[in-house]
Length: 326
Image (cartoon, rainbow, N blue to C red; front, side, top):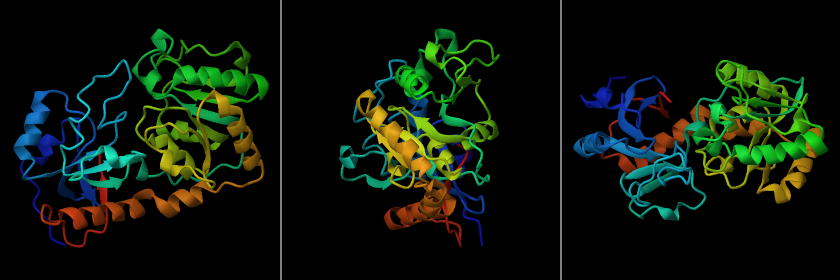
């Protein structure tokens, strides 16, 4: 199959953080760039405006609640409609897509739909749950950008119940500093029941997740966290905040449970533990039937061909399109 020339400036553009490349299943670059985060200054807006007619730029919800600005007090803000109508298409994660103007072509799709782990699940469960904190602001006792994004203040409330009333054992990933010394404070009632770790590489996180009965996802202002589908691919159900910006589409009777806040948290906790004990979930089976590179890559290719065939020529024989380099 013959290569298709990509724009001469393509490789320079994708060195800039917001601009993410797209490849086909053979690893060939295609003339599409995903904009996964707000522009970091006028030079990014300038690059976009200069090349937007020659390269197909599509939005991708991959950062907080982009294209909207987050209420995270540690984040930048921008006018509500700055990015909503800027790109001709958007791979979004919104429960209510009506926020986008009608000229924007939409696809419910996230980075977390792709490249799922194929590690074997573990039958041995050492822990009740794992929580993934990404890189928390440990020096400030977990007050900061990452801690807000992961809803850490709620986690501490939930831990009171999980450790106290339910006597659960759990793992709080990335709630210790890089030196593995100082940790985010947790309720006294959790002493001896909770392991706190520093930021881990994927393999180490997978090992904890596999040995847990469920993965706990309390975040709200977070863009479809990859740990959600990673957990499901490892055959571990999730307990997810209903209010999460992206990732809600993965939760159903085969994959886990929602809660809204502390008012229904106990009910959700009871439900997930009962269903786990009864063997009711099939997260791995569900996620590989509906997502991963083949299903999602085929969907993205169809979306591009149906809406932008006049803008992009794909290399001959292309079967999938994949967001690359995340």
